[in-house]
Image (tube, rainbow over all chains, first blue to last red):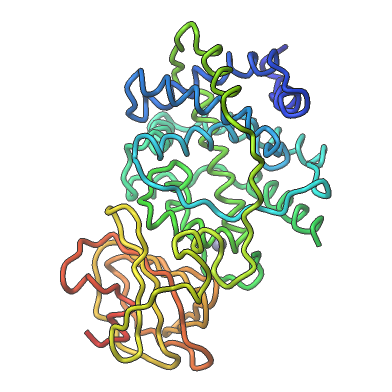
Amino acid sequence: MNKTNNDWTAQIYAIRDTQDQAAFAELFAHFAPRVKGFLMKSGADASLAEECTQEVMATIWRKAHMFDPSRASAATWIFTIARNRKIDALRKQRRPEPEDLPWGPEAEPDQAEAIGLKQETEQLAIAIKELPEKQRILVEQAYFGDLSHSEIAEITGLPLGTIKSRIRLALERLRHAMK
Amino acid sequence: MNMTDTIKHHLTPEILMAYSAGTLPEAFGLVVATHVSMCDVCRAELDSYDAVGGAVMEDATTADLSSDALAATMKLISEGNITPEAPRRSTGTLPSPLQDYVGGDISAIKWKPLGMGVKQAMLPTSKAATARLLYIPAGAAVPDHGHQGTEMTLVLQGAFVDEEDRFARGDVEVANEDMEHTPIADMGEDCICLAVTDAPLKFNAFIPRLAQRFLRI
Ligand SMILES: [Zn+2]
């Protein structure tokens, strides 16, 4: 499968619907080395990062039914799972999580929303790559956890506009579907 | 618990980004999770910072896994139970993330009196910052005395007003060392807030700024 055209939604749905181990192996080959790299850059040693990565990948299998491509890309969703594991294992503190959004058969992800979000997410990734070198490095450091809040304040001019309004639309649709 | 249309004071971009990155002290994370439970504006902004995180992870240097990692993960999966979690959604006054720390809704809060009708309840979080609930009687007012560090105050019931703004349920005030103003709790109802500070626990910073004003310390 062509990597640039692959948004991994099919694989995650195959895991959710038929416990498809081949689809999981594809997802694992792409994301596990990225999750491990992210955890090591965040300060985990190789053996802790390996252990946490396996747990993160197992969580992806277990939570496949929670994946909503109209609200987050696969990379975004997997990042949030890896980030939560990082807080637990490295920072050893609880992570207060927001309430869940309305979710059920009435609120099946909308195809057009998901495609729109995928395009916005790709544009955001390109925009981040094209940031001036210094700012791009600051953004990476913010997510690897070695930036102070005042340093983060310097980089909040990220190009988030379109993706933000896309996500808001998806949220409104979700809320509406539950009324 | 969506109150998006009535909330006027939101979280700052740097707070949302730090929460998304997972670098915020637990007490501040509790303010973010509680506000986002009520506010779709900040939820959408938070989701977009998560998308930045996804893009950063996608492009980050990869690290090879051990040769048996996939097999070991499949073993983990086969050993674990898949118990679909029920959605967390509060029907009470306190949003779910706060109820997790209180052990219930408003009636479960274990208040300790601070004098003059003001009460507080400490919440258990990691030491980097402290979180507490404050109860301030309607109509109480005091001049501001300044403060230290970053403080965030999220209104859960009632409201307080200062010279320029009104902070009602769902609104969050983010203050730093430079801010000076004189808030008054609204007459209508006693005010309950979640107050978080990262100031060191010196005597004059022990009770957060909001309580200092009301207590005339
Ligand atoms: Zn907000």
